[in-house]
Image (cartoon, rainbow, N blue to C red):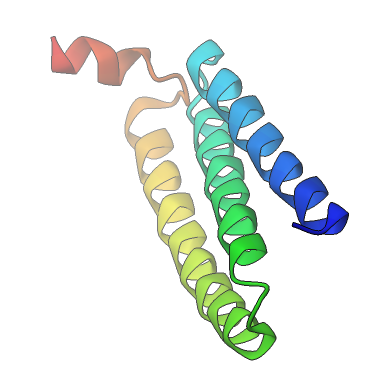
Amino acid sequence: MEPVHAVIIATGILMISIAAFGFASSKNLIRQLLSVEVAFNGALLLLLALLAANPSFATLFALLLISVVTGEIVVVVAILIAFYRSTKSLSSEPLEEAMV
């Protein structure tokens, strides 16, 4: 494995661990969703580092995933706006209480 790939893999693992901590330690829905996005991007970085042996396939895969993530962000923002309009808060506590 090349040193560059090792750095990319370490960066992906670091992003996933930071995102897991951010998700677990926050009650704010926006912070939690941003943490999930960072974890998803860290996983994509790991996957692209493993696909680097075939650059054309990695580029195509990266473009496909960027378009999927963009659509996902639009849907998440729409859900957050609807949640804020109904509860006047972005805390995840009402969701936790509703699940109990």
